[in-house]
Image (cartoon, rainbow, N blue to C red; front, side, top):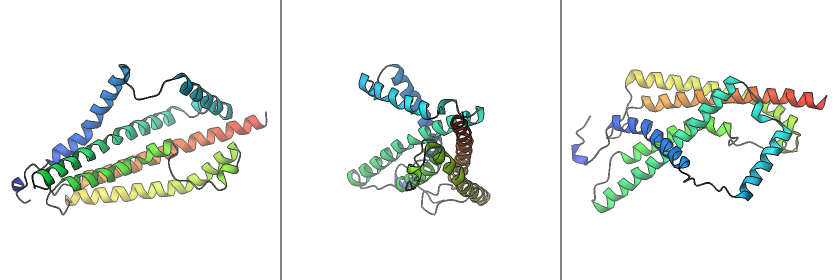
Length: 237
C-alpha cells in the first residue's frame, strides 16, 4: 500500500470499522438517557394520544396483532427493530464525513482520499441492513391495485401466497452474499482507491443483512398464517 502520510489525515481502517460498530450504541444510549430525562422530540399532547388510541383500537378490533406469533417471531422482530435503529445512526457519519471533506477541500485546498469511499460503502451496508426493519414496518414497495380491495383475510392470504417469491429472492441473496464474502475474505480483496480498505467486512454485512431479511420474512409468514387462521375461525364462529 502506498504511503498515505502525504494526504494529511486519513482515517485508519480499524477506526472506521470500530466507529461504525460503537457509534450507534453511543447514540442509542444517549437517546435513551434523554428520553428518561423527558427531552423527547415527540408530540405527547392529548389530541395525539387520542388519535393513537383510536388507531390501536381499530387494529385490535380487526385482528389482535399484539398476541400473534411466538417467542421466535418476537425475538426476530426485536432484532429487526433494533438493527434498523442501529444502522440509522450511520447517516450521521456520512454528514460528518462530507462536512470534513468540504472544509478540507475549500478551506485548506487538501481534498481527502477516503471520505467518498467511506460514505458510499456506508450507504451500501446501510441499504442491505435496513431490509429487515423495512419489512417489519411494511415499508417495501407493493402493488395495491387489487390488494386494497380485498377484505382483511384476503389481504393476509395474498401476503402468504406472495411470500414464496420473497423467499426465492431472500435465499438467492443469502447464497450470493456468502459466495461474495468467502471469495473476498480468501483473496483479501481491497478497494482499488488509494485508501485501499478491505471489502470482506462490507460483504459480511451483506450476508448478515440478507440473513436478517430472511428471518424477518419467516417471522412475518408465521404471523400471517396465525392471523389467517384466527380470522377464519372468527368468520365461522
